[in-house]
Image 1 (cartoon, helix red, strand yellow):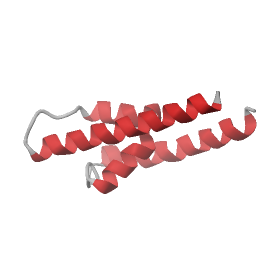
Image 2 (tube, rainbow, N blue to C red):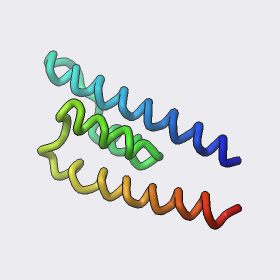
Image 3 (spheres, rainbow, N blue to C red):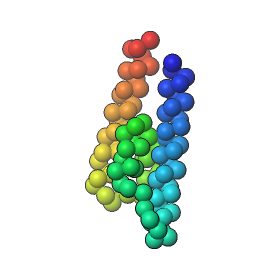
Length: 90
């Protein structure tokens, strides 16, 4: 079960990183954008690491309060949940 969870986390974080990078590319090219709620949803569904990496790498959404508080907070919550899952649910 742990392997499946780890694979899920890797995939959701990679997808989140890609979605954030696509949104940044669309913003630069003045194209149709990905909804902020979709970006936040990917983060909440486990992609908070990918979201944080994308925010730093691409300097994307770093000036928006809607992202600068919830995503780091979600990241911390996810790490706490992972510690609990891997250490106490064995």
